[in-house]
Image (cartoon, rainbow, N blue to C red; front, side, top):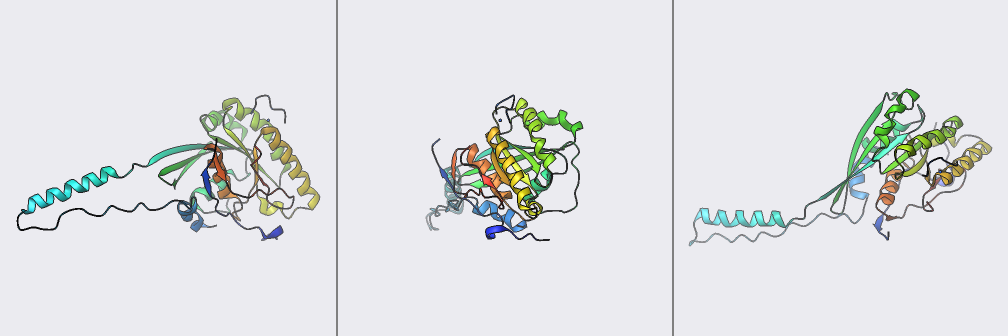
Length: 279
């Protein structure tokens, strides 16, 4: 069933970045496959193909032998190759934690592969995927770590949280109990990594939007309160309808490198909340 969304919002749009200047009382502070193909090209409109330098090899001459001509051309080719700027590479580790069956793996697969499978496969332990994008002369690899939500896997939390640049604390918008669990996930995650940028991510918005207005307001207000206490960005998403999936990782990138992000915020109940500028 396709929900009827307010204000005609649609799936993820592309944001632009430009260089800019540089929690609940927690105990420790704290769409389609085509979209995936487009990410490399549209993530930054300023990405351009570097033009190749014109060949400077001399034309054939009756006064020069074949080997000499080949040697001059090869020498210039090697010099041209050395003149090309080497690409920088950066790895951004992103951890994903939250209760079982809330859509962590689905969101990761949707972002990396651009696909979505309705059949749920429970994560046992830790899932790991990578996606590389190019911005100007830099290759950025998102290294995404997804922890199974069963409590028996909590001993693997350090594997997911240690060295993470950002941690996505995720909950199911249609199950209030998973939002209440965020307190404990946040406490434990911050225990292993106090510097990671926190995000509070609500999943399954396509189902949540059909809830009665008062239920939507209750969950939205509570999520805003939690996000404020966590000093976290708050984003409602839907994997099946490609709502805010790409934007989550664009905002992660912007915050990781102190870049200006032009994605508009959404703060009205009844719409997929997207709040990140004030944290």
